[in-house]
Image (cartoon, rainbow, N blue to C red; front, side, top):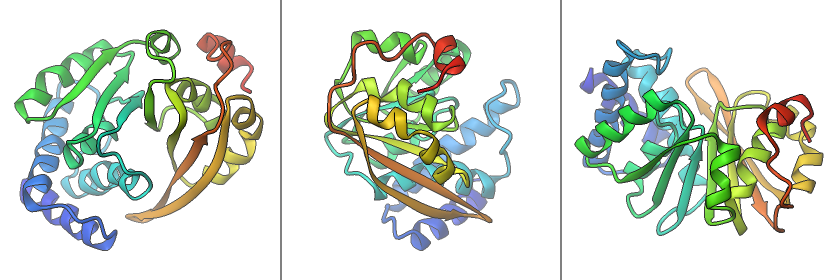
Length: 234
């Protein structure tokens, strides 16, 4: 499994002009293997083929590095699930101070146990995004998120974590521009400004990263309770 995964990872890194050394690639693949093994007993991912793990999880996560300089920055992965994109970012950029946030305790307990074994330094927090923010509002340089919710919902969950001058990095699929158009009101109300959207070919699909700069403090009434966010998105 490791050889196939690493070969696909290195090929993708070269194609995407992401320079990482072989040791870092090995650590990324070690995490990919750990996810696949744990998936046998816990529902972490539908993607288990080594080449697909390399492309759709590891490489996809690393596209964030082409959009933002994370060295020395505080980064929170909101709704990290099995650890994507936060864990690959912590491996590829160990100088970043990464927090992994998710409400599912079993996943977070697994990450808390496996990351030290892999030599990955990341803080794990088990909580709902709209509740955890009260203790760390506007203290992060970047909030990243992948496959959590449509953008108009996601921004209300992520923007309150980010300091003015920082940014939200939203990882999206083929509907990225449609979701961005839908989220215009949320962008304005939450103190954000769309700075860049960049497309990345991942296998046969095209994924996008939307960078939204925090230009003003998010009003204190946000985020609302999740039921309200979902019922009435901004």
